[in-house]
Image 1: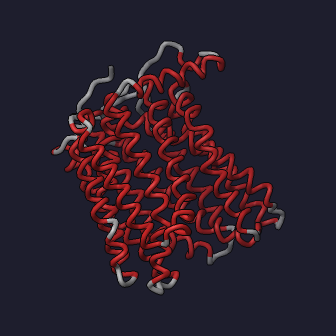
Image 2 (image 1 turned 60 degrees about the horizontal axis):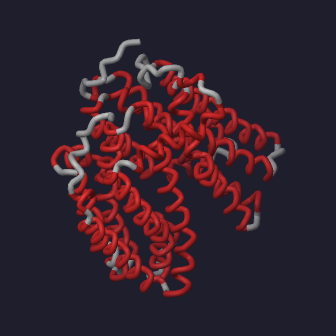
Length: 414
């Protein structure tokens, strides 16, 4: 297989195949997610059952995340990703077939959520670990920015696209997503580059060595003081981020925003995130990771209280857009820093471990948001979350390892 990763991304055939497959698959997910929510309400009826099905997908990642990372380092990453896409296509196609035959049961949706959650976890771990080998270390920040930008672009139009496809029948969104997974598998099959460095029999290690593999990845993370501290700050920020969704919806309802207007508020957030993704490569090339982390947290701490002052949905959307610009820059910065620093054979484990704890914080924050609003009210809860962000920003500003974290494009694989 030939590899020439250190070429501009627009001329990197392998990256273009990878990103095109992900865009198609992401669009299919957006279409399906819209339909799945409507289908769950109609099928499950009870709100708690709807939440259980939706939560199983995230729970699969939290429970299986570190194992998925170990598998991504142990197995051939490209073949693993192809198998995951085919598996998700079959599971999604099964829902479409059951719907068409009128045989869909809630138990199948439970199984569907678990299976697709596990396959998505493995795919994401392998994808993240493989990216430096596809584009090269010098292009990694730009590649991550482009990937996030494409994902956010799909998010902007996702609900509208889902509604259009759903209008053709409730089977169509699942059929479309099944085809999108197969298209993604095809683009991966057409790529001609190794997704990982040669290893000494990594794929032949016994299952009993899995725990040792996981410990090796976690041990490496623990020995990186800057990454360890900034990951803890990410966990704290995601607790606020998860709570923020419910706070923003409650504030929007308080200013009598319609459901459509609430949707536009989050569209504003997606547009802001898209803008941040587009400027991420520029920022990472010019500023250190420590500077980006400090600026992001202080910016969030200063912007978040503005939600309380917003008199209507339009102003809420503007605040959401402004707040969302910074986050993708930071995610690209710390992701690039970690992937360039980690040895290739540990990238799956380290990335999956970080993703597991940050996703767990996001889920916990979502649950805590309701408790916080119930205890303090939406406006006071907003100010409390802003104070929490200020505390995280202060801690980051005072932490020497975080402040001195080098440029994200630097770092060896030691």
